[in-house]
Length: 163
Image: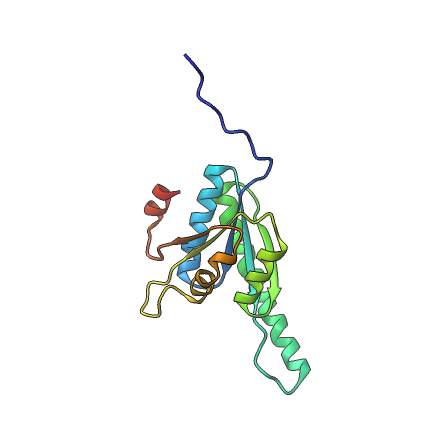
């Protein structure tokens, strides 16, 4: 009787990237990514993008608005970091960028070869799946990693069954 073949470790952990925002869909993507990381020995990465305020006459006002947005992003990331750590037992990698969310995501994917999978959850409303999903689908031929799109209406039980 022969032993089943065992997969050799690749020497590289899988990193599941979630783009952070305040939507319910993001929480579903985060939960799925954390569960996948737990089950596969991987890790979660969080990307928070601070969008620049619209045209302002005074640089001081724009700077203060950016600072407030950064503080809010850091508070949200601290909360999400705790959730990820509770679910998968490891600290996530955290990226904070300024600019447009789509542009920051594409730039990070180009810069960071350790990211293995982008995990997004689709919107559940009439607006469609969401602007990031639409942008990524338009560039799938140019991406080097897979995109996991999780249905935005899944329950915790359904997510656990999938992960």
